[in-house]
Structure formats: structure tokens, C-alpha cells
Length: 254
Ligand code: PEP
Image (tube, rainbow, N blue to C red; front, side, top):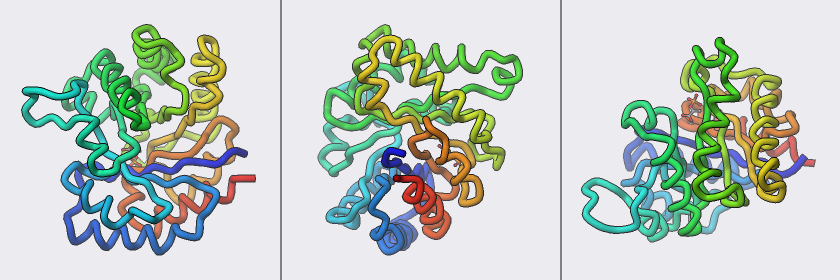
């Protein structure tokens, strides 16, 4: 099995005090894990703190969003170059919580993906279906549309060395994770879809699973062929639970 990637998504949690405690916990517990790549995506104001505490460790850091524009009169936005100023190397794009609450379109998300890539940040594109869409059996169609917007605008080669996180919306923060088989089936579909346009890009792409991953279900997800790691929300707020998930990923490397 290739090396896995585990990404913490802190969402809008934390403060200077609790972050310091949590990041020190990560450093202490994760420094011995040499067969997994770990990233923590923090709220914007804490990028400097992440940089200060994580530089010279085996943990990378990133943001949870970025502007689709490079520079200019865009009040409240944060550009790719600003993230780079704080040593960020990853950025989450199109998380369903943003897509729903801030009406982000597939087109907007595609532009953000290309901004990140053009500036040397690794984009983590979130895709996934609602429960109604799964029950109607149209989940592959929904995910294909999200990916195809990027392929049709920028070409499939843009996916080379990037990350897609399959996050069924019904599994995020609900405690109801997809089974290993459900996730594997969608991951294979995603990889095949990109491979049908660009095989090399599909091979270099990491596909993470996100949605109620915890220390109990991590192993059954990470043993799956096309699951290259996880995007972790709630359980990333505990150094102990996050370590257990990273351990499962570390052990699946062979
Ligand atoms: C997420 O927000 O990306 C996520 C997967 O959250 P949780 O792990 O809490 O379901």
C-alpha cells in the first residue's frame, strides 16, 4: 500500500491557548510516525501560530479556503500568496459546509482549485453527495459533475499531484461514516473517471475519505485499495484520537 495522507480540518474551532496545547500534542504523538504524511488545516488567523510551532516537524499545515482571485479589492478574502507567506502548503477547496452556507458554485470551486495549483499549494478538493442523492442512486453522477467542471475548464492534467477528498455530506459530523466498501467504490469511480482523461494524473492523485472517521473505523477504511488517507474533522480536535487515526494510516503502509 502506498503512503497515506491524513488531514486535520479544525473548521472554526480553537483559540491561541487551546491550539498550542493541541499542536504540541500532535508533535509529541506523531513525530515517531514515519510512514504517513500529516497536515493540519487551521483557521486563517492561526496560520502564523501553526508555522511557528510546526516548522521543523513532520507535520505540514494549510488553510480551509482561499480566494479565487490573485490580488485586488476583495474585502475579507485571502489569496494564495498570503497563505504561502505563512508557509502553508495545502488548502481545502469546496468543503460542503462552505458550498452550502456560502453558495459556492462548482465554477467558483474550479477557479479556486486552479489558483491553488498555479501558486504551488496542494489543493484538497472536497466532493460528495447528499443522502437524498445517494438514496436516489445518483451519487456517481453528482460527484462526476463536481469533478468534470474542473476537467472541462482546466483539463484533467490539473489533478496531477493533488488531492480529492470524497466526503458524503450525510457522513460529515453525523457519526455515520460510509463503510469501507461504499467509500472504495466511489474512490475507484473517481480515479477511473480522471484516468479516462489522463492516466498519469489519476495515478499521482491522492483520494481521501472524509466523514465521521474515528479511531474505531479508520482501519477498515484505510485498508481499501483506493483510499489514500482521510480528512478528519471532529476527531482532529483531540490529539489522542487524531493520533490513533494517524497510527492506523501509518500501519497500512507496506
Ligand atoms: C470534515 O469536516 O471534513 C469532516 C470529515 O468532519 P467529521 O470528521 O467531523 O465528520
